[in-house]
Amino acid sequence: MDPEKVEKLVTEVVREVLSRRGNGKRIAIGSDHGGFELKERLRALLEGKGYVVLDVGCHGKEACDYPDFAKAVAQAVLRGDCAQGIMIDGAGIGSSMVCNRFPKIRAALCYDMKSILNSRQHNDANVLTLGATANPPEVVDAMVLSWLATPFEGGRHQKRVDKIERDV
Image (tube, one colour):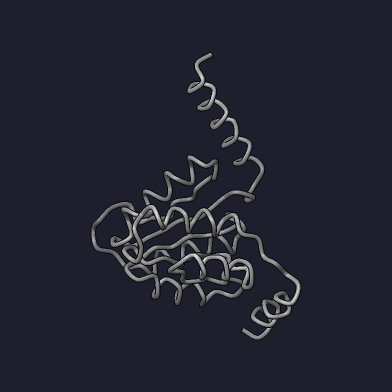
């Protein structure tokens, strides 16, 4: 059998298994109109890596309001439909503010690899917010894949995450 066909078949089987398994590799993704192109790029990248992506919108470049989509990303994570979420707007700031209004959501606005790693290792961030034009697309690809692959270290950081959850 053709190697490309085999790879495509394996990818389809993996996606089917993941969709049945639940939220282990399910990612909610959303954007406003300013982040639409980057969202589409990241959706394709993640699907190519075997993630099951729940695209909550927006679905075009027509002007829209980022709070609507940030709320949808946060709610998908809260409901357990997805393990993590990614939200993109012009600067990433507003989406971070919206997502962090929800209890149990720890949204991190990340702008470089150091903030990506810290947000996961020390803060167990479950939503990543990004500015649409803060970094070149190839850099964002690496940042997102690193964020998803980086585990929470626990240990001394766990008590701080517990305080966030308890005191909010």
